[in-house]
Image (spheres, rainbow, N blue to C red):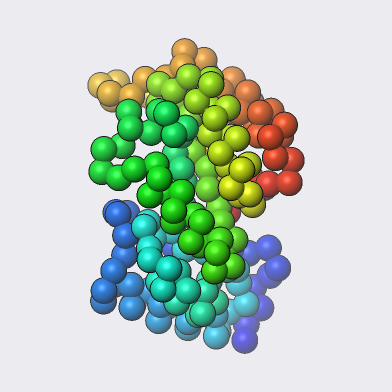
Length: 174
């Protein structure tokens, strides 16, 4: 087994609702091979998975699951119409139930209020999320989402302080 290091993570991320069927089976084979050949922390971000799929990931060496809640429960329907906030929470709880570490955070600058940011931070703390990445929407002309009026740096500094108050044990990355 090749040693990479104690603090090295490899997280594979899919674009889409979930990974199923043959594609999920291929991912399982890749994780299994990585776990056999390389000493590395394996993380998956595969959308909405069933409990047995999450267990299969754990069984082949995946230790963390990444699944962002994106924003507050109140603001979520304003940014997403393909699934619900509750579906996000259910997936997080399933991953935790089988013993995966969960990485979950959100995006700021989508038109949410400061109260939405507080609600998101409280939700993450209540879920006992171990790693909380916070992303900032980069404003693009014509994008339907709006920013708070602050600069990205101001927004990030404000959220970092809030995160420190709500859960000082979480880390900034997955």
